[in-house]
Length: 85
Image 1: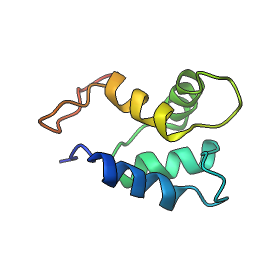
Image 2: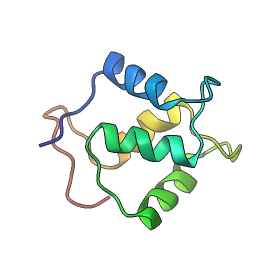
Image 3: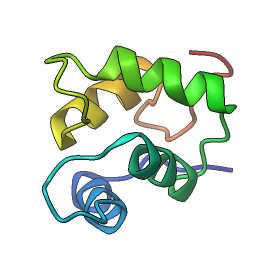
Image 4: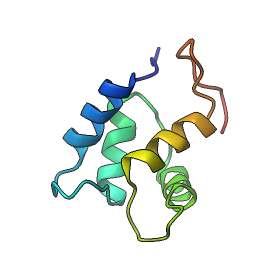
């Protein structure tokens, strides 16, 4: 079962996945972040979520964009993601 990362935990996941150390995630790093919090999406789903989450269209995902994405995918206070996003 996956659990909702707390603000600090999500920040830690983001930092660990940010291999470039530039405070943004490219597609590969984004996939690593999702894997580390237990989200199992296909490559196509990861690509789709990446494109939708990249609200400023800079080709990267920021921590706020990641947080918004997780909330939009059904992450609730109980920590149980919805079946589909």
